[in-house]
Image (cartoon, rainbow over all chains, first blue to last red; front, side, top):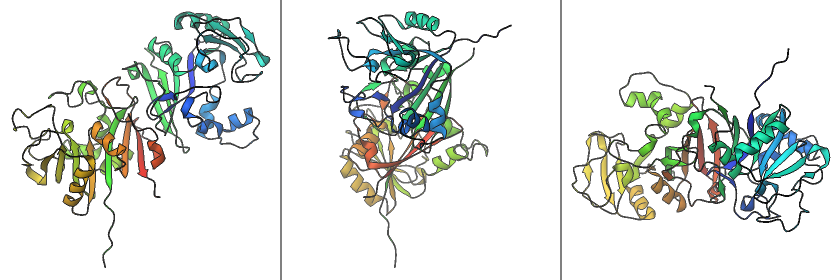
Length: 222
Length: 222
């Protein structure tokens, strides 16, 4: 006899400023988060997990920031991301040489569905990551992603527009938001159009000594 | 020999939603915070301090929420508030019978300067509260308020537009924000136009078991 579990749809390590911006203005090749620079993710680069992944040595914190950051990977069988997470280009692809920000061996190690109005052939990377490009609704791409996840969970990787669309469609089971104590002033907001979202989730909040706040939204069981 | 201290400009118990709204839409006589209802202040009404003030008995929490809430009063000699905190009316006063939301003995017990383009004679209440009405810049009303405060501190009481104006003018020394885990979706935001505010303050964050987050912004010493 085997036990099965539902496949969850999860968002992890989703960083926003005090004023709710998940990315700044002016994304470019040199500035994936626009004028936000690295400020939304400094806490992340101080964790033991990230330092190890980037080959920066064995230092780094092993407290609450690291524990929350590490939940990103286990049990994930596929990621869905928006095109603006995949790259800074807009509109039709001028060429298809762009293979993401992450080098030849991206940290995903699963199929990744990239939502875009400009589809292109799939791209197979080292280490198990395969980028598939889809022009589809959240519901449709999620159905395909769940099949590709082999019974494991689906991660919604961002950016903010994609996370917001999945939240608005009530497709998210777990949302981990990290509030960073900066005021960005401009960019793309997470919370727009989500009035009353809190009614659908149990919300747990913990502040970290690093200064960030971890907020965990778990879908209420009916 | 006496020691003197600078008069501080302080904001306390300033509640905002996850998406940064300090008040909802549609303020009216029955709904001082519009569609937000009481949701931004539920934590506040569960504190021992507030229950005692409202004559609700000796219950209520005496933990971090109460401790932060209580810092509102000591050392304050005057409050500055916006007209929308004083009342729901807009434009010229139709009559001057409105004397605030708080009954004949308001909780301020000091002079209160109400910023409005429609000045009217001062109103003296029981318990030491006197409402003065001023059509003035933040700098000018603060100068008058500091004189009236008798060497004590000045509280900026809100609403969000007034707090934002004083922050933009770099007149605030201490800002205590309470982030409540609800998504309001609409209303008046605190953070608009304050990009980079974090650079001027040391920021301490603590989460409360009640679910709210207390963020204390203390002006950096140069």
